[in-house]
Length: 424
Image 1 (spheres, rainbow, N blue to C red):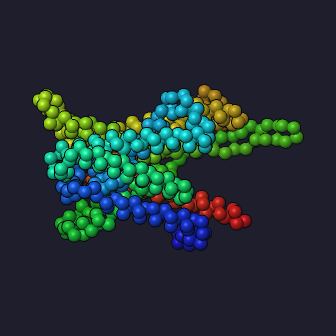
Image 2: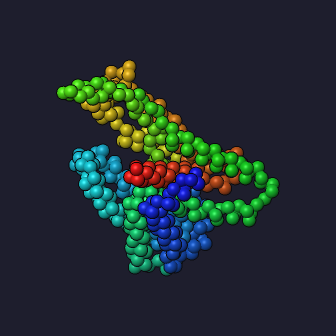
């Protein structure tokens, strides 16, 4: 491993790219600690600590929500916009054709994604301000209409700034910019968590600490195992004679990943599970008694740990199947194999190949969906075993950190390989 670090450091281009990315991440963490004036940070953190749903949102914002900083939404609006256009590309024919135009088409879709992220940032900032203002935790003071608009503009500008930083990071090809920003927010909170653990150390809770460490290690191993796991489908190509040359006649494999959806299902599930409670917060103080009661009942229902985690588990599993169905299309794969003269040994080309690929992917998808679902409800499982809820959102955080680390390491490795070929 140290040898690889030395090789990376000796190659000037990769070294400069890494230093540039680290500098941008440092800027992100500095900006994340610039709060908007007039916010009681202490009350905000206490409120977030007692709200599991907003705690999840704080993770996906890179830890910026707990400071009510100028980048408090993180890259959430951009992620939401990306998800919307991914779904629209499957429904709207013009966007589907645009996505098939190669790099130029992808650039246009990226431009549309940025444009949509702006109004989404305004809407999310307004919803968050109203939600915190109605929480009764004395978080915001002197909230006039002018000040509300000024905060919305500031937060939206902060989101656009992070989006720009993320794109600069992605251009260096040493990791995905948006993923690395979330990664940096989670890792930045680690020293504080360790410090609190040491300060509040209780020898009688040694079993609990050992349990947390064991779960963390097993989760890391499981994430690596599932993320790297794949099923290799053997593919053979028939020999084709063109003039005096013979093409094909080779054997290869088609890799099908166990977790093809990555962390996208968890992001989808978080976005959906946040919606009912956030909407209900606006109607708690409604004049109509039945509406206020219905809103309060909805909030209490989602605060119930068993209901919340069961729904979270089902949503993650469902979105795993949904997103895999969007990304993995066995019909097109079977058609492409047939056009290229390829076939799966023992399986007829065409419909039978399509059915075989679909059934194989469904079996793999079941394992991936169950794994992501267990990771999502890991806090409830650990809490029931240890009698404490200290591991809030731990499984999701570990999943994101490990997945991003693996992706970044692969991109750096590909850069090293490319430089080795160039130097030969």
